[in-house]
Length: 72
Image 1 (cartoon, helix red, strand yellow):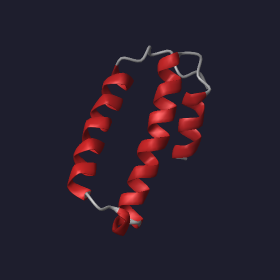
Image 2: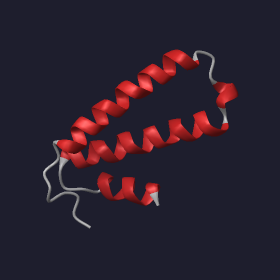
Image 3: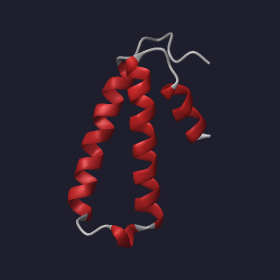
Image 4: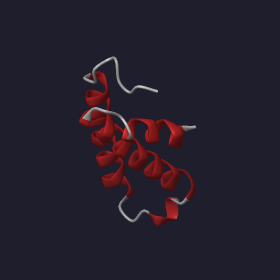
């Protein structure tokens, strides 16, 4: 379901929609990696801190999105 959501955003008419779709997909991939492939992380604390910063940027972009987007 999340992939479907990010794809809808990526096809949105607004550049912010498109960026949210790209960022959401990347954040989702990183979460799956952390949940299921945590042995891949060499610098887990640093990557977790960066992930939190990225999520905050994502949230700010989402909150600033024109409410009529994305269009289904």
